Image (cartoon, rainbow over all chains, first blue to last red; front, side, top):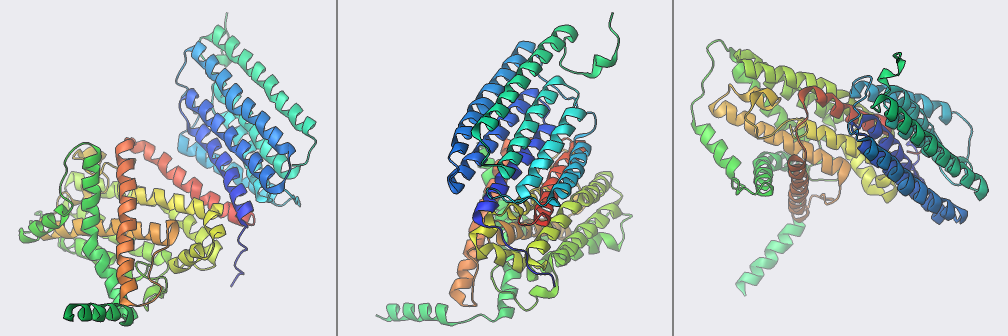
Length: 224
Length: 334
């Protein structure tokens, strides 16, 4: 009989649970039909990442993580979602049922991809003082599923939200690997996100202005 | 004076008289058998109340069963013996499953190790199969539609059940429901570990599917095209129909018991055979089952039914949760 696997401590159990919420939100984005609900899910996911940062800061006494959590709350939970939803309101496009496959198929594909991420990262000898190792596997799964979101949904909003969610995955990974990273690096990283918001905002505007739609289906056709 | 003396006697009797394990085991079956219609009545009543209707009284399912048992049985012309035997086999299966699962006690009863989670699953599967056969035997189009759909969706939800079982096996190194419940009772860190939360959630979705609730099926609908489980019983009448109705109420209660006493809230069970604690365990079980019923009634009233071809999305969600549970366990920790 195999030995009974060790029960994770309350700390690592709850951090893994929060990381799982981040991953499950990612799956919900993959499924969501309305662009609006995708943006809301992104805000929720960012909230979970912020909560993770606060939790690590409080239990491991890494004070600079509070500052990071504050920045990430203001930027990712409030500013970015409101900017994207304002763009959506201006575009007056509501529905983005742009799945290239059925939802069940996409979820199964995403499961396969996250299994791959889990096992590849799980075999790396990474040990962290601040977060349990499985959280790194979860972060890798978030990043891979974000790629799937970008490739398998054919509308600009999904691609923008997918990219932002990818940044959330990287945030979780950086919390695992380098919670003690100098604050300036982390903040610079967050401002990268702002650049991405500007770029994707421009993309949405210009694409909607030219094609009268947010779908990217028609991009491979010649116009003249 | 005499009455207080008597009272003390009763009190002493409640504490001192130990029920034999075999007696408790019979009591487990009786608990499910007797209280299953009450649970159905409670959910129907609550649902009606939430919709602003007065609704049937809570005891209505008992009156329905009594009425049906007094009626005659009509068998379709072309139906053979399977039509008659099917409901009986199913009912017997539902009587057997409570022997295997922790209904009232934390400690395993003599026949408790006769089958594991998969064994209980097989029995529930056999029950579903025999009802489906009995329905297919009639030649009635709606009953056949129901039985074919029930088998299809039953097969689609199966992977989630299997992965829940795998996760239980990884946590406890057995797949006996008693051990999973004991693990959850052992410490708080067992309860909040992600694997436990995920399998509890996945099993919740499985129960939602298997009891024929929204978003998979409208429970009290009369429109045959949306029916899955309900359509199978359309051709039965009289005592056979009563057995089917009673059986499905028992199946619902068995699944609730598994949900609360194995995964979600395995507290409040009897730790010994003392009469008092066993009676308390029955009351606690009823309380927990009523709470779960209330949650299901609220879900019934707040969501709409999924289109038939969208039900796979629901199954995919249940599968996602259960496979993630196994994965985080494999990654270490979890």
